[in-house]
Image (cartoon, rainbow, N blue to C red; front, side, top):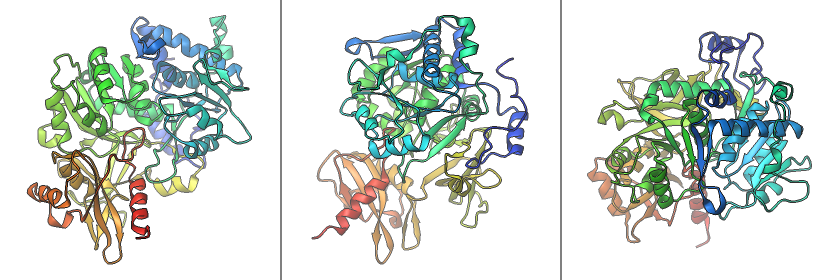
Length: 564
């Protein structure tokens, strides 16, 4: 049967108490073609059949940091061996397998192998600590965890050992050292299939409608929540965005620099999965460093990368700027609000298309800029991707007029099913008509361009007046001394909140007056000026580059309440 055919009829396995899915909605998406019978592992298998000799993946994880590469045929065979090995270790349909590794070929192979074994994949960034990892392992009931002893200063194996309860998972360790009693080497997990004809007896037929992924939110505003996806929802996101953006604009052939952690949704979806979907080459950077990344992108001939604005800001400080050997065709900044001046600076520096896209773990990319847009359009956050509905509602839940700020809601075949094990939270966030409340504040103008104004919890409300945090931050980024900035609210007895600018500055003598003069000269209303400045050596961030504003608020609150 062709992978493009509609899945078989019947009760959809995604209909469960903690899911937003209904029988009518599943039927609509399947009969309308938004959901197909492709699976994550079929993306790789189809690429291996069509182009077995093409390079599928590259990393620098060989001896002494040497370069490694695998063709599609080699990667597909390795994935099969890993899948057979997982089944031999007792992994069956619906079991949870968690991977906590740096970006590398094995991480990508495990994602496809877990899917091929009929199990459910969850990734964890290696920088996570015991609090987050304990929560994720308990939530998923992980049967297997794959990790390694050390990644730079992080010790993920130690964190995993300290995070599981009495029902210990099988711990699989990448590398030649650090294994404890009962733990096995990743090299011993792969079981070569002695007889390819018997594989159908060993490996299941993967149901594209079944749960295949639980991705956890980054926890910038609270405890991470498990976002449930099927093969259908994930592939719908890829198809929608690529049809809108144009795969030809990513390079021919596409060489995808995977700089975001694969353990995070960006690296997983737009690194591992999209590369296989387009039959390009994924080049995995294990750890972010601006200078290393510049060399990496140049030597591998990277044509595209997705990442938080932080990554692009860092590259602007490297020798990749103006380098004629830079092969970049497109840079897509996503994951956090994009300073308005950043795309233009990136285009000038690298001579390629640079634009923003809005997405969440819950929906992938739903709003995006694309090639062909004018400069004024590129100064927005883009338009809704076809297949994604976006609306802005007021406090009464009703849609507002054009150019009126409000809460942004989305609906799509690529929307997640719900929060794993949290049926009440799922119903709070997704209404009966399938609209998901993103928690973002935004406005949509008469040309359907979307302008994000920040997370609803990031909005500073001073004396009843909303301060558009993202707009203020975007202008502050254009100040020559500002490296990084976040505007957050601090409690105030009279006004409720006051705005505080937390700045990583190139100089120690930057003042609030100087920053506010810059804002006024740039046309920012006096009502929106920060009333406090805190200089810091760096801003706390998630592994994917998002600023942890909840941590900043906690730090500021401790300062406010400390004895004088």
